[in-house]
Length: 391
Image 1 (cartoon, rainbow, N blue to C red):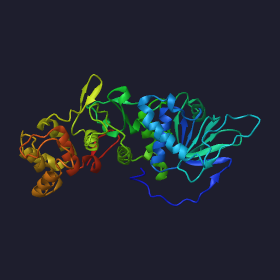
Image 2: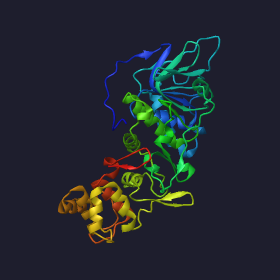
Image 3: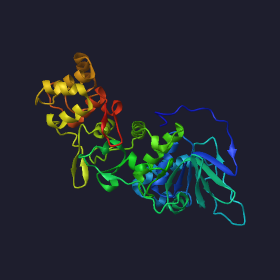
Image 4: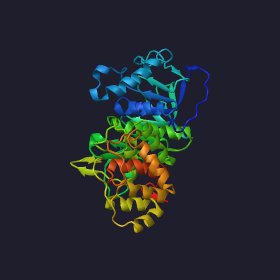
């Protein structure tokens, strides 16, 4: 959201020693999900406090696959060290609890401090740390045991947001806010993250690294726009996560370093090009040639004018010339100007390995990049909570 949502104001430096600390987003937990949620909320530009129940991070105890992320997190925490006490000693019942937070910092970490109660406070939440110390937050992300929350809500159980397998027989995949590759070809829908009838509260599994960023971005959106989590804007949250290189579609064969990663993610979310699901993994098959039959209906679903184009172009090869014809007809663009622009960008900008050739049948990679750039189905077409296209 930092890139897409927010305009920053100047803040007068002030170190808070008050009995009640205030923040936009409070993340509670000590596992991977808590760290990723708080870091994303911070990067998205809102005041964030991470409340853990353990000592400060020790990189020697971090799994190798997570070290790059945690190095970045610790770098930020270290930068804060001169103005915030990030390693809080264990509470002593004989002494009052002391927690210091710097209001000029967007990210504060309070380590190894238990909380005694969670309760509603207006439209937000209050978390009690001791008899006379508490944190008030507009949105709470819980990545911890839910017992205290269950008691506060007066309910019998509460389940964390759960992912689901990628399945093209329904369109809910278009509402994804996280690729959950650790579970295979799974994704997390925004509407699985939101808790019915519980505003400004998100509950995620403590050990699910991938869902933390989605929770952080969603919490940040609600606080910046002073709105409820139930009114989250799917496209803006998806765009924010993509801008920070968080995969939303679980494509096993498309890595972040791929020069066309963003275009493939966006077109993948629309379903205009669908992955092959095999042995619980999703393969985009970027170098496979695209076919007329696989794109015809999805593009017609997105654009009324595409129905006319396909009626006039029956069972033709999806080569570069025909694809230019399609995007120019549907998008009201000049054919010659588009040809010239594509020729200039083909190798240098898009980094395609092939030679620019109007008669060449396009790969799924090439077709995705062109459709994403000239029709923008992800950016310009909305979907409802079920993933149905709204035109």
